[in-house]
Image 1 (cartoon, helix red, strand yellow):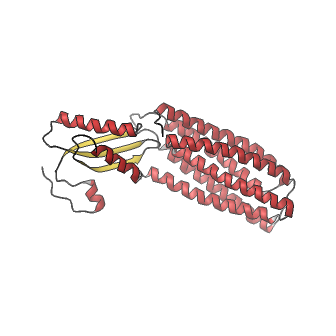
Image 2: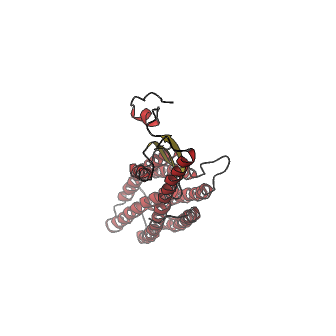
Image 3: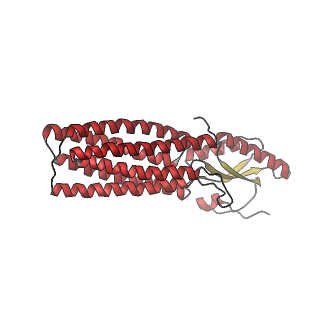
Length: 313
């Protein structure tokens, strides 16, 4: 995966967010036309979902713009977590859409409503499906390159739209050829349940970032491998990592020969930092140098519950 500069990363995220807004607005117009001609609850559920997409994508766009701001005196870690907050807000709209559709579905089971012009509905949903697939392909590519939580959440939401669009197309075909109107309502209720499940998953990911969950074991193991492969590094401990919203925060203690001068220890620490930055260009890295063999109460001891050794001063 190519390494991008901060400027390239921010530009890609802004483009992906703007594309999402443009698609959502287009789909609202297309699907509103479909609802007007067909009176289909499935198409209506998809249109409501697109309304939520437009609002959520607008939030994503502004969150991406805000998160791209450099660190300042009041936000020394940067503004990247605005993306996680955006993703969390998106889940509320996804869940709200699901609840609305479920309510309307139950009402239509009690008071059925006939469907008309299913051919127009099919055309509307097929066009919507193709446009959505194009956007998802672009957003997933951007999310992979930038590690953006907000763009990832947006792509995940539109991936749900693909499934719902396929199910609506299938439903309209059933209604058109077999006249089974209740199947339209059943499909809408299933879509609403799927939206609620997806909202839960996105909320879980966003909260993990906001609560500073550690990075994946694969990344942490690679950090250890890089640090321990450098000259004069005898060990390391108390590695702490977190996602700042597209960039990483890495903190660790390096163990070196206690007889080194401060300048030498600083030089070797800088070498480790340089190697880590080559692997994670946008990372913020803090390194503390310790003499090897020092007995101290470490974070690693507190986490694994082992008995800390007596300090040696």
